Image (tube, rainbow, N blue to C red):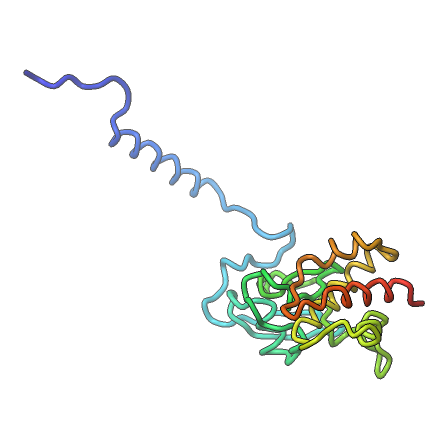
Length: 201
């Protein structure tokens, strides 16, 4: 008794057709990457270090790093800006918070190449000489730390919050800083410092 052939495509036919379509799509044209500028996509670089520029705290820097290097690693290892701390290294604690174009970001979760052409601010760039930023001064005045390891990230997250919401409510402060962990649980003093900084002139 001969086996009857089922109606429709066989598995082999299906795989052949989809493979051909996928290949045709790849040959039809290249995809664009990035945000519309002419910078090469990170996927087309490396694996060796590549040279590129970063603007950090108002200064331009030329760095050489592998495309896989995070912004945190380049700040700490290439530019010697160690205020942003390497703690969880997976975007869970906020100890590495920096500002990129005014927004708080986890530097451990952003490739350094993604920061090209953008304004990066770290805790080292807040003070003007011996004059502390209002947020830094408020953290000292209100004892907004214990061990101090998370403090740079807490300070930068607070700066981002106050630049976006100059007079935040208590709930807005807690929501704005919810991505930054303090293992010492100094949250009440951190929130007090943020509230005081919002009132500083």
